[in-house]
Length: 173
Image 1: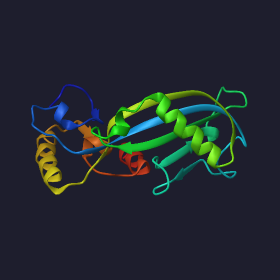
Image 2: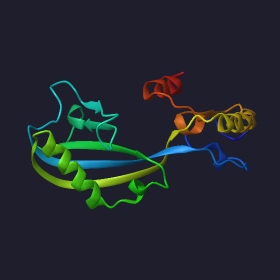
Image 3: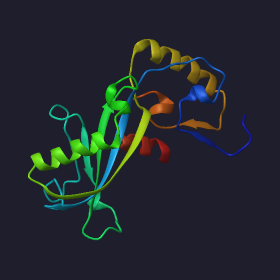
């Protein structure tokens, strides 16, 4: 038992216990963009995100117009670039990503000014469900299950690729 009412873990469980584990993950570079665009969104009205699984180096683009923003007449977007830590893309500069954002917007007929680009590198964005890693994780998870007030939530701490809506549902239950 760990002293406390409840502990919620969202990180790789190998950080919590003295355990070997080098589980495989897909990494991601999230490129945040603040811009003034015309048209103001790359999407039709009522659409806030889109998957691009085959045509671009990024896989998802999100327009945050559906959230409260303090930017007058500006648009906030994120582009998600999946990669591995060993990929060249992982270590590319802000300028490299900015060039690709501008090229994408131009290819869509969207004019405007990109005011700011911010990168966030997520080394363990998605678990890769390889059977050896799943088996090793299940063994580690059995150790963590001994703590009756420990809850693992999310993709990384459960080593499962699950939807955000399912993660929220798990947290509520």
